[in-house]
Image (cartoon, rainbow, N blue to C red):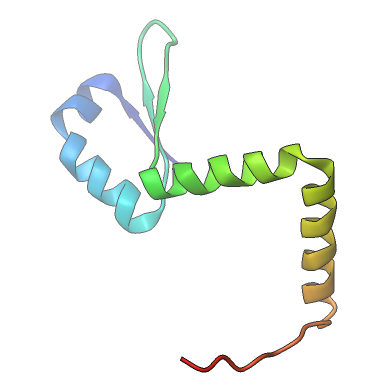
Length: 83
């Protein structure tokens, strides 16, 4: 995570936006009144929101956890798809 003050962020916003998008990095912009903000790419934000949404439902959360456990144990199925 990158931390920059408000003045730096204002003067270098385009460069920070490019870094955030190219590197999937986060930028914390600090202010003197402790009202800080975080800049993240829209793609990362959408992924985070989708994950939060899926985790809200206990059945989805359990299914996802089980799928991850299966993957880690190598318990997977490979299928060919004709295109």
